[in-house]
Image 1: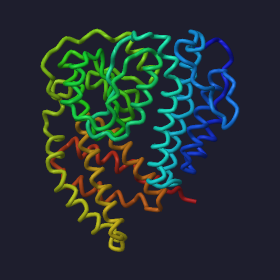
Image 2: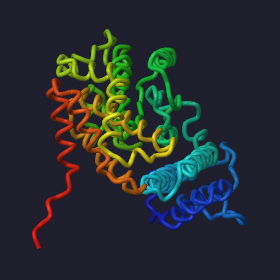
Image 3: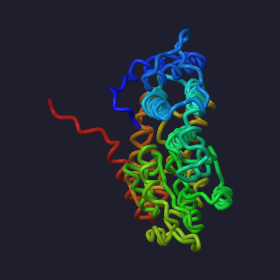
Length: 390
């Protein structure tokens, strides 16, 4: 989707967009994005406020101009908005911005995506004239509120000629499948960034495939190189262009059959460790909190807010442990623990506060060998390297 000319760098607009997000300036952010559409498409920017040229009526836009506009839209989505939003997440993790600032920045990014969709709409009508490559459904898994990645994929697919039903965040599996059936979607694209939602994602994948609908999975929740997507018999798309390429090769219905039970894909679940940890999670969290308060004296001086965050952190730890048992991958848990340690350190909380929690869970789950192995691995990774004698 290029015209063979040298493309213009979006590095400078990325920096300006980052500044606009940091200042919560939606108007400026949208203007930057619209101006970048002109730069990316090799079109001169309109005078005043750096905006892209006014919309050209669909009937008047030539094929080459429409192609340039679609290519520019994709570049702006993937090379301007997406990396800037990723920078927002990294800034939050480093404690450089607050949760409120992160929420505002994300909302502005969503508005910028909408601006791209609006600006490129005239380029779609003459190119496809009411015909589409196919129809797909893009959705977040049940419980997933981070919808911007799914929205970006949806807009890229639209620019490439697909009719897309974008369902957004937090979609219950039964409604997802019902909509896919009603619209005769040729594929379902599932997005998730939270690993603890993997069991629900597995159910959605199995249910869609049981209805004869192929599934592509994407997002950080599915692990490095999509290892958990493949474990659950779904295709993995690393990004929007990859999703488009896979759709072009994988559109044959899988043949309707009864939704699979998780044990068929994950035979290790037969040991019931995941089930027991999930069912006893409230008790595990309660006892772990008591043990942390006993073994980490600093908690005795915590404010009510700090104690609430401590309970939340322990709940996350137990949830990720259960998910690691679900997919039988200790790396899922250790990645989360090391990430949590970095988050705590950025907020001036000593990561050693995690040791009492890991030790408590290891003691409570001493009869569960897989759980003990996962907790021991995480504990050992957190240990500081031994000091070398001077």
